[in-house]
Length: 488
Image (cartoon, rainbow, N blue to C red; front, top):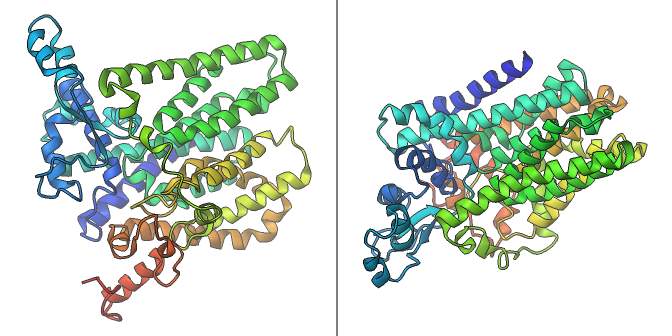
């Protein structure tokens, strides 16, 4: 029952927090980032045209969000969030095709198309929300799609919160009140509130499917049953595969979790069980891989047209340890800056290492490894700060694991001794997220963002996003003339 209550409450709170600030004119940024635009249109093109190409709506999209160097649409430049798929067949050959090939093949080989530069899973999930209004003939406008995409994103994160609660209450904490408290932190003391639940980012599905995978493997991790649950094992592999399809960075936790699950099976199960586990998990992963191969060949034509492909070898430009430290403590992008409650996750990690119960704490140890590797590796990415977004977007993939590390602290003697501090940090974290709902409209980035080449703006306290937002409040109440030098 609590699962339903958490799902419904968090969805309502996520969705109507945006509706409120939008309706009152407090924050009119309905689309948080151009990164999320392709996912907004994927359900429409699938339901109306049976394709993921955005050709029909391309002019509509670029008129609202053009390429920054082609705002007059004269150079034919494609915005970064879309990929241009050029014809692969010679024009002369296309003329000769005539009726010799299916019309869909002719279209794929001989026409120019525009497609998402990012993974498509968030858009596919959103079909469940779009299907009724689109089927009833809804007019396709940015305003209508923003409404539906907000609803879809809120549903994904609300579902994640429900799964988190089940994991905590059924296996880890086994106390409803404390499980609700930790679930609340996951949902509302992190950027899941102000950012991930407010747009069709890739990060929402990553978190949902990683949590579903862990929940499917709960029998192996926590119960040590005599026999593997074959259905749940297969679903666990399938959900891990979908998380990677949602965003490639999920590959890291999938690898770490897989290794730790194999370790647990070797310790507690037979070799036959290990073989069953490997076959079923690989089967689930293989289905996802085959789906990727199919849609890549059908629509992207070549792996090189996938948005992240060309970035793999040339985007590791951040210097160590700046990116790594920035992901934790940058005044405008740090995990501990925007969600200081996760200081207690570090305390949870300390408790795990201190008690040295590595077999029983294997999930926590896996979480520590995932968090450390993620922040080390992504910290080398040139956009470790997440581009134009609120808070620590690039670290949001590991929020389930940061949340799980609160459990050792919650169950320890330290909890009662430091409860007041814990509550204060929860409150501060929630207030920061409310600030994001109210103020994140891109103005701070427009005023201070100098890109990845010159990163001093990410370390300024005086001009940090939170201090800037405080100045905006002072302007509103007439105590300050303007919030920044270029602000009106």
